[in-house]
Amino acid sequence: MRLLDAARTAESLPWPALVEALRDMLRRRHAGLTRAPERLAVPLTGGTLLAMPATDGEYASAKLVTVHEGNAARGLPVLLGEVLLMRADTGERLLMLDGPTVTARRTAAMSALAALELAPPRRQSLLVVGAGVQAGAHLEAFVALLGVRRVRVCSRDADHAAALAGRARACGIDCSAIGTPQEALDDADLVVTATTATAPLFRDHPRFTGFVAAVGAFRPDMCELPAALLGRAALYVDDLAGARHEAGDLLQAGIDWSVVTPLERVIAGEAPRPAQGPVVFKSVGQALWDLAACRVAWAHRSAA
Image (cartoon, rainbow, N blue to C red; front, side):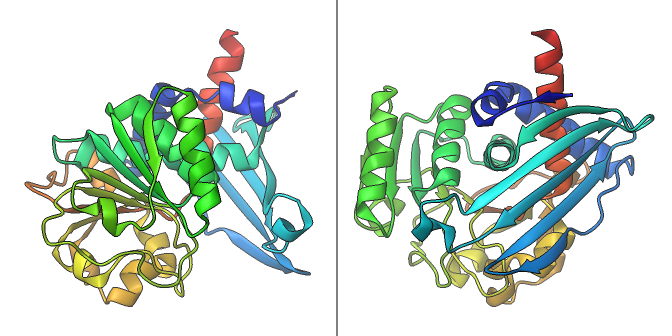
């Protein structure tokens, strides 16, 4: 079995291949070829242990991660864990990948896939709210896959926003830090929210008709988006069952779930793409997305 650290895990998950693997996994899921039970959450002293298995019939994966919010004050990562890939027919262990890296890259790739499928044609400017790992991964993915030319970053910690903007500029990206999301919302084509907020990050702007990928709020008590925006936007999710339990943005806004479309239905050609914006894609994560990433890494390492 091959063990991949964070750097080698990232190298094994190139954005284009990851997007196509997620597209294929969505098709497999829609066709009923996959199984992924609801994730198991076990309370720990000061944190939570999460276990997430999945299979598509050919391969199986299991992600085991711990989340300890207090680790930030200790100088330790909040999220620690691994993802194991195995053959479904024999149980043979193939790869062990870094869990946080898999999570960051497959989440950003899923958001980028949703934008490629659903966003209005104009995709030049990006607003990123948040400056953590997910914010950085989304910035990288959207520039690489969507042709974004200008990025603005905002965070409740101005130093973190400035640091992320600086790293982006070092890679040749036109990127700057701003004080509030409202400053850039009016002319943003694409928006990513990747925070742990419990109240909307900005007010709805009636002239905004772009695409929003909301990935930060993963509990019913969390919320990043204003209800007014959700009320006038076309709504899509990565996992409908998970969103109905975890998507605080949609739950707090009292959204009618009959108007929320799973992305897999669009990929399968059973649901239309939105005729106009705004469009909101809410992502809560799913073990099958980890499995899709594992398949990419296995193919990449096998070909190396």
